[in-house]
Length: 91
Image (cartoon, rainbow, N blue to C red; front, side, top):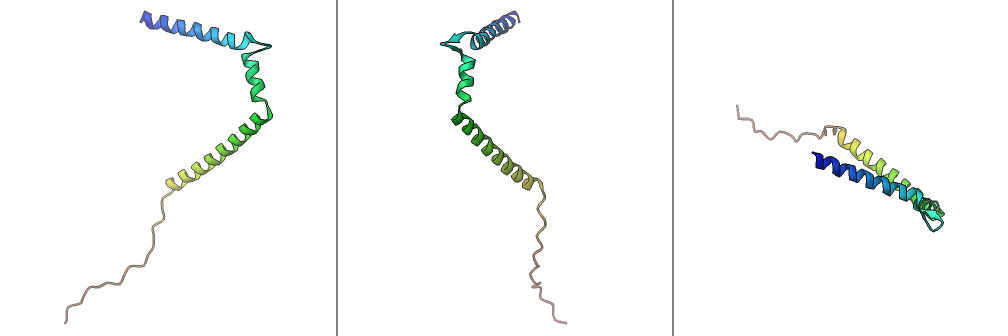
């Protein structure tokens, strides 16, 4: 029990230090967070995000329509019955 608590405490401290490093320690002229923002704000990255969002919306719409088809009960088919082939006994 105490070991689990210490493990979680150490993991929390490591995560906090990593987050602070990501946002505060410069790599060259910018921090890692600023580099990431610069990379994802380029026109090709915006185009890729737009295309990805468009495809995701299309896939979502298709999945929704397929799920709706599965949820709706199928109408009973009304095919004509074949004529009866019973033979009447002679009277």
